[in-house]
Image 1 (cartoon, rainbow, N blue to C red):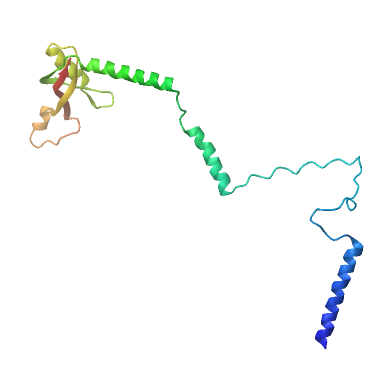
Image 2: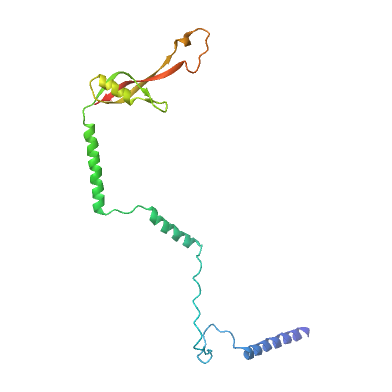
Length: 180
């Protein structure tokens, strides 16, 4: 019996809410209204501005799009065929010039010429190669082979004396050079 009473109460509440809907306002629709149901708009009312553009979507597709746009600036520009041919001609000319320089007669000489010490303490054997080539009648040279020797003060040979840091120094020599 209580079930029937509860069911009756629920039904009466449902019917009452239906009646309330019909008296209070028309039921909500999906935006489709007949011309008779549409409220009249006063002529002086201004049209509302459109809603602002949606904020940037930080989704995967948007990020991939950004990546493609950035990659366009990283790629080199494509040259026209004329520019490409000009570039190739310039490279061919440079290669021809270097082959001409290699065609000069050169000879390998043997000897011994000292290398000077550069400002950073390393041996500079270009001057030694030039000196070796000039001693053989050529203008200049390039070092092919070097040798090093330790030159020590006579104090080093005193029995019982400890060797000190400034007693010996290493000297470098050019022993073979390619001369032109």
